[in-house]
Length: 407
Image 1 (spheres, one colour):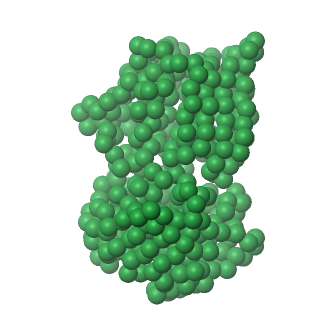
Image 2: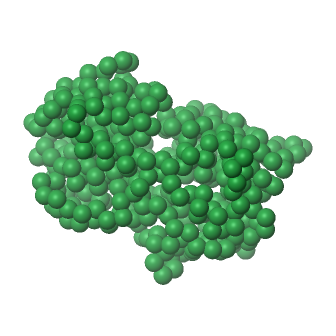
Image 3: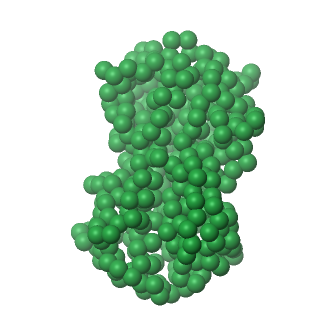
């Protein structure tokens, strides 16, 4: 457990972000499927990426992805294209996260996939084939990673036409996959409810961008601090990452001005006060929901977060976890299947110290930590969860004046 405080509540300094694990993981699949080697520079050191790297190097036919959801989906599609047998398993929580729509699609394409325990969930045994069919339909409203996984293997089987059944979840991540594939000379066309992948991968070297989802926590810090001037190094203002929209979200609704500066981004607490009653649809930015919910709680504002239909299926049920933890700060949180509302709790007294549970979720821990700017101190029961996406998170907070001690 760690204790986090910030003596001055004034934040000024520079931080360095990890490389995007989302882009790193996609680049790794492309590298594994490309006929010629190429270099991936600035690859993520996050646990999720390390897990996928090990999975792609497997020689024994047994892959354990732990808690890494992206690695599970991408590895499943990748091994479906390989002429060998592979068993893919994960953590207990991973075995509760659905993979049925992706398995159904890969089976329709000709892959032989067997559930080893519960129908629709890992672990699975995959008997791959180098001759999969070139058209498929997939249920697209559960996870964008199902669609991205299919898109990524398209060039390895001579192209692929994917019919999307339902409104795609987190469409910005699908667009990011397409943009990255285009770097390797593969065209991805969106034709109504179809995604059409054409071409084969070229061995173009690639440098991974810094992670915009990691940047969101520093926008939260800027919003909650009494004063803030944060320079985020080596973060591209113009990015293929959908999560870069967090900058306009915070500028428009939460009082943080930002813009490109040198080779990074500057985030500054604005002079205007945000409205105390806001709403935003997070269907395309699901990983930003925890950050914004925690910001709203810290600012004691009413904020209605919608489009949260995928949050129950993440590392934890993030809707339930947010309600449980944010109410400890003295706000009221009401929830539904795909929405959450944070609002001041009338005469409730804001506590000086709060002990938060991370719920084995890296984004819960990172979103809750900045609340030390509006409380005397916060404690988090498991600081190690951040290694999943941002191993150096606590060191970067220290650069901005946060004091972090083990208790």
